[in-house]
Length: 277
Image (cartoon, rainbow, N blue to C red):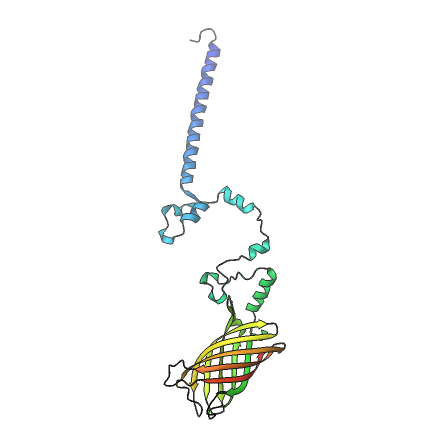
């Protein structure tokens, strides 16, 4: 009981009541803050978690509908300077993308053979050349049709033309390939129109170009090769004369692979002049 120090007692009681009220309010607001934080946490998902589980489209789990928050760890990792140079970061080498024409679809626009900025720029310049920048190679040739004709009645002259587009060249681990299309006519009105693929191997100024091309053959007044469908295998050896020009020799064999009624075949040789336009 407060008897002697009546005023002191009353003051003490008021102070105790005030501290009690402050303590209760503090606990109330603290608990509300925790509840709010839990609610916010329940309505959010971290970027790392989202990247890990939310990649299935409409099959995504419900948590993928939450608000995405970026963690401090991810932000900090972005601020860490990379040990690689900026040039190395630009040119990423993918071990799966080194087969040129045989690359899988994911490698479009990538080529692991491009290792430096200088090589990359050269490669991009080659890829971006237009018609006016010497991308089209036109060859004219003339020579002898059926050079090993035993009877001597089918041997005649031939003259032809051939086209290659440098934009369509593809580098692979077995060589550099491009489509080729051409036609020739003989002195006895035989006609052969063909399209196929040709490889290019450069040894300094010397060019070696094997090719294979199926085509349509019309005998005319010349040799009967046994079928309209014939296959031409050819090897060319050329030398660069001056800028964008090449002079070469070619030897070819044409036959129907025994698919026709007869398959006498024919061997041909010619001198070829090529010019880039």
